[in-house]
Amino acid sequence: MPRVRYTADGGRYRTGGVTFEPGDEGDVAPGLADHLVENVGDFEYVDDGPEDDVEEENAGDDAEGDESEDSADDDGAETKNSVVTAPEEFTIDDIEAELETGDWDDHLETLRENEEAGKDRAGVYDAIGVRRAEIEG
Image 1 (cartoon, one colour):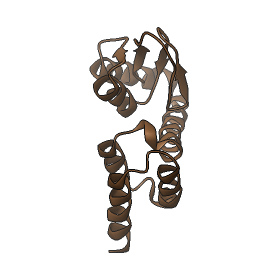
Image 2 (image 1 turned 60 degrees about the vertical axis):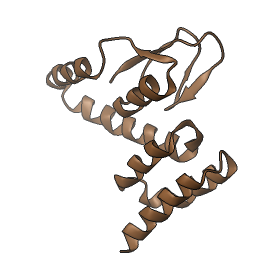
Image 3 (image 1 turned 45 degrees about the horizontal axis):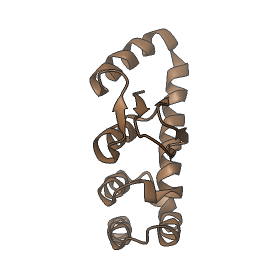
Image 4 (image 1 turned 135 degrees about the vertical axis):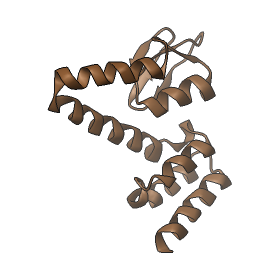
């Protein structure tokens, strides 16, 4: 998993089940790391970025065996829950991309309710509607 550092001068940032304070480092899912570094802007990769993580994960797969598979499953659930329960931490484009995977099909109503209670963005409602139409189609 990629490791990122929170570089803001103050405040906290909570995402993907991890709370960052200025200077904190943490391991996050690859897609979330890209979002934090590229879109949020107050984060940087601790290592050289995603390319190094692939090599490290491949090396770790040989050494860890089945344990690494369990970790990968946990990471996916953590990201999924954070997007469904905290959609305000993601851009509309990020949410659209995640909905296209089909992993959230059972959680669309929860996502809608949480978006309504948060930023209340029309683009998120549109993405949910498009996904529902795809499922029914």
